[in-house]
Image 1 (cartoon, rainbow, N blue to C red):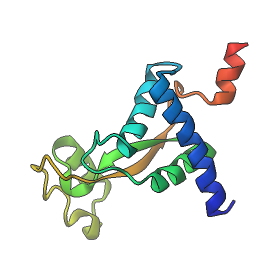
Image 2: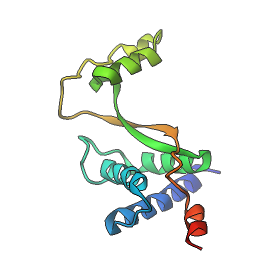
Image 3: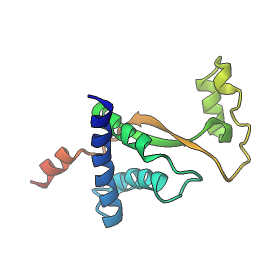
Length: 135
């Protein structure tokens, strides 16, 4: 699968999520939270900086193929508290990643975010599963 196919697939997934968001058409609360976080991160400035749609398209395509879910998290310089400690523990021994971690933790504006992947919760059902449950 080449990049254009991945982008088109991700774009289609994003379009479906966008429709669900604006029509308030969710299967359950978990789906509402997941879809809302994606749309708000790319379009609605709920975060300090928008995540580029192209990046989100590729992430959505990957998540669909790998059975994972998108997670939007703060970049390392803006982490604090338990999140910062978890980051330090995860990257212990990697000086490059730890160099700027927590440096701007008190900053409340102009923070940047990135996409990570997490296991897909059972509550996030595929469209195929939705169709099966509807019959």
